[in-house]
Amino acid sequence: MKGKEYEIVERSSGYWITDGGGNPDGPYDSIADAQDKVPREGQLQYPLPIGNMGGALMTVTETKKYNHAVDIAFSLVSNHPGGEDITGDMIRTALWNRIRDLDQADEWNEIAANTVPFDTYEMD
Image (tube, rainbow, N blue to C red; front, side, top):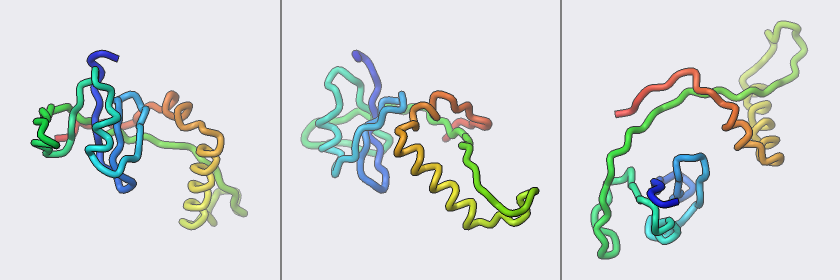
């Protein structure tokens, strides 16, 4: 993995290490905890304005970021042949059920491998 780029990102659940290949590792309670788990031969990037951490100066590397719009299929049952009786609550329940099913079957990577963004833009 020499030269592989890793990034520590903050989410509501904590700090995560990402490798750009859809393999998140975490969550960690602090940046320092996550930093300890990054392979030493990799290049560490921070999307956060971090300067001196624990006496070691970290280099912040600018990396282009892209925002991708993707969709995920799910189904729901209604009583109308054209779906005119579909409500927001029905959509929410069906989507949560789909997420639960993907979690239980551990199929997120399969979904990712078959996902093609339908809109993309470079972020500033």
